[in-house]
Image (spheres, rainbow, N blue to C red):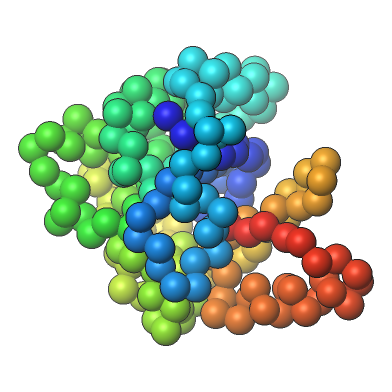
Length: 205
C-alpha cells in the first residue's frame, strides 16, 4: 500500500482529535487540487499495514484518538489496503471518515460491501473548483456526505449543523503542512503571504 503521511491530532477533517491518513495515488486529477503531490504512487511511500498500525498504536499509547480520517490521493484506488486497515482501525475507534473522488454509486458495489461496512462517513465526488463555496468538510458543493452507520447519524448531523471550515498547520522538520478544506483563493493568498516572508515552498491538504 502507498501511504504518504499520518498526522495527529487533526481537528479540521471530522469531529474530535483525529488521526488522519493520506493515501498516495489519484487518477481523478481534478483542476485546482491542493494535493497534486499525492497523485502519483511513489516508491518512497510504499509500506504495509503492520507498519501503519505500529505508528497508529504509538499515538494511541499516549493520546486519545477520537476517530480516523482517510484521504489522499484517493483511498478507493487501493481497495486491498482499505480491506487490511479498516478492521484494525475500527478496533481503536469505529468513527472512520473516508474521502473519495468517486461517486458513492460507483463504489457501492457487491465487492465493496466489506469495505463500506467499516466506514462511518463517506464524502464522495470529484473536486470542482468553480463549485468551491466553502461547504463544511467538502471542497466543492457537488460532493456529498453519506452517513453509512445509523448509530452515528444523530452525532454527525449535530456536528455538521453549525460547522465551519478552518485550516490547521503542522510543523515538520523541513517546513509545514496545512490541513483542512481551503477556500477557492486560499492557496494563492497563502503563497503571496509566504513570499512576503521569503518562503516559497509549501504543501497543503
